[in-house]
Length: 485
Image (tube, rainbow, N blue to C red):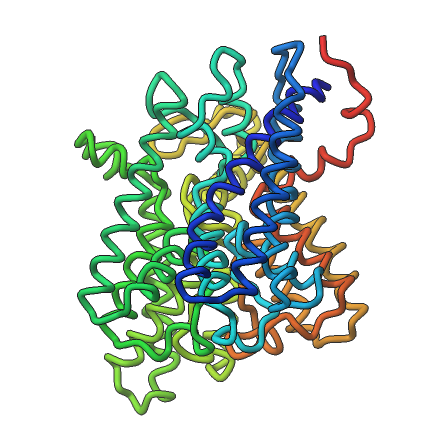
C-alpha cells in the first residue's frame, strides 16, 4: 500500500475543501453573521493547515493500483465530512458534533436527510455551505479535483480515482484523456446548473434561493432552505425543479453524445428508455391513485405526482407535499423507486436503472440456459455485449447492497422506531434519497434517532454514494499491510 501517495492526495482534497468554503465565509461576513464567519474562518484555517501538512508527504514511488484508488476515495469522503462539519459545530448552530457530521455526510453524499427541525433558523452562510456540499458531491469531489488540479500527471492516478468514485456498473472515458473527460463532465454540469438558476430567477425566485435550489437539484441532494422544502414556491418553479431533477438523473455521457450529435447512440440507449419509462409510468399510476385526494383535479394530481416521482427516483428528496398521507399503493411505489434510483453516470443514487436491466437480462439468460443447456445466449445492453466481469460486478453489488441493508436495519431497530421508519430510513440513506416514510417522511426528519443510529446511517450514506467497495476495502487489514512494489 502506497501510504505516501494516499496522504499526498488527501492533502490536496482538504486544500480544495478549504478553498470552496471561502464563498460561505464571504456570505457570512456580508450578512454580518459573526458566529458563522468565525466558524468558517477557523475551519478554513484548520483544514488548510492539515492539507498543507499532508501535501508535504511527497510520494517516493508512483505505484498506484486500484486498491489505492479505493482507499483514497473512501478516506477523502470521510475526511471532507469530518472537516466540513466543523462550521455547524463551531458556530453553535448545531451543538452536537455527531449531528453536524450526519448533516455534512448527507450533504456531500447528496442524500438530503436532515436532523434540523428549523432549517430557516440557520445563518445564510451555513445554508449556502449546506447546499453547496450537494453540488460538489453530486459530480464527485475527486472528479472535480481531476478536472481543475494537476496532481496526477504521469502517475496514473486518474482512472483508478474515477472508477472508485463514479456511480454505475462501468466507467469509461469519453475522450482519450481522462482529465479532459472530467472537464467536459463539469462543463456540462455547470452549464445545466446555470440554466436552472436563470429559469428559477425568471419565475421570481430570489437569487439566494435560486442558487441553493439549483445546487440541491444539480447534485440531486434535496436540502431545502425553507422548512416546507419546495411547497411554498409557485407551480412554475416546482415544474422547473421537476424537469431539472429528471435531467440530472440522466447519464451525463448522453449529454456529451448530444453535443457531438451522436443521435443514434442516444436513441438506442436502453437505460435512457428504461429510466424514462419507469419515471413516466410511475407518474401516471400515482396520478390515478391519488386523484381522489385532490377531488379529481387531474392537473394538480399529476403535478404533485410528477414532482414527487422525479424527486424520489432521482434521489433528490425535495418535497411539495407530505406523501405520507397518500394511499398505500402510491407510498409503496415511491419506496420501490427509492431502491431503483437514477441512471448510471448521473448525480443520482440508488441501485441504478442500468443494473436493474442487467439483472433482468442475466435472469433471462439463466432461464434460457436451464431450458437449453447448449444454447449460447449473450447479454446485451444498448447493442453492446455485457461481459462476465460486468455481470459479476452487478451481482456482487446487489449482494453488498442487501447485506449492508440487513445489518444496518437490525442496528437501527435498536432505537425501537416503527418498521416502516427503520426500513425506509436505511433505504433512503443507502440510496442517497433523504426523506423516507413515517417518522422520516417529508414532514419529519432524522433527529429522533440516537447518536449510534445516526453514525450507522451516516455510514450507509457513504456506502451508498461510493457504491460499497471503497468503504468495504477500507476495513480490510490485509490491504493496509500490503507493501507497494
